[in-house]
Amino acid sequence: MSFQNARFGRHAHSRDSQHRIIAPLLCACLLVFAAAATSVTTPVRAAAHKPKLLGAPTAGQGDPQPVDFDACTTFSSADAAQVLGVAVRPITNVGGCSYESAKENSAGWRRHVALNVSRYKSAGDETSAWGDEKILHHFEPGRKNLTVVSGIGAEAYLQVMPDRNDFEGTIWVHKNLSHFRLIAVSEQSPSPDILKAAAQKIAAKLP
Image 1 (cartoon, rainbow, N blue to C red):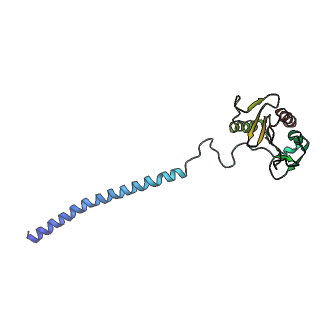
Image 2 (cartoon, rainbow, N blue to C red):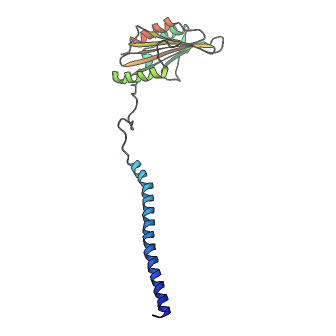
Image 3 (cartoon, rainbow, N blue to C red):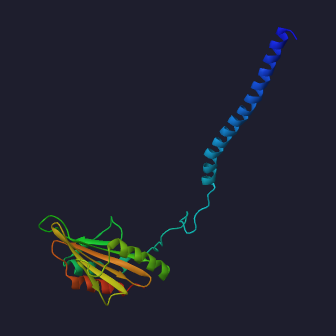
């Protein structure tokens, strides 16, 4: 064999060796890239098709909703006047059933009282909603400024709170298919007995 043929043979053998080495490396690189791409895209697809957890809220579900009800059918302007101790006029630009004193007091503002009633289709819905109210307002016996009231509905609470230059008296009452809140704001501390009497009259008109 000539020197050139021997050199060519060595080069050819070297190229074959390089091809045998490079080909597996390319395959290995392609496999690594494919695995990386799969690890990135798989969680996205899995998340997109992940089933909803049982009990999780979905569209159309949520807290029990009260039915439409006109609270003023249970609380007239005469009732409001007894609570506030002065002549009243209706307030029409707020929700619920609200009244304010017909005249301003010496400080230039008016006393006001409001009734909000929540009625439900079933006792179960009402009980669930009332439970939320109890948590929201911290109806805990023994809490400062809060009094448990007996003899009105199934459960009732009274709260009288000073608020800057006025006082806010609120009574909450829970029944079977409904619960309500009566709130009065005045420059004088509201009479608990008057609030209870008004709440008793309202409760008698609700299921």
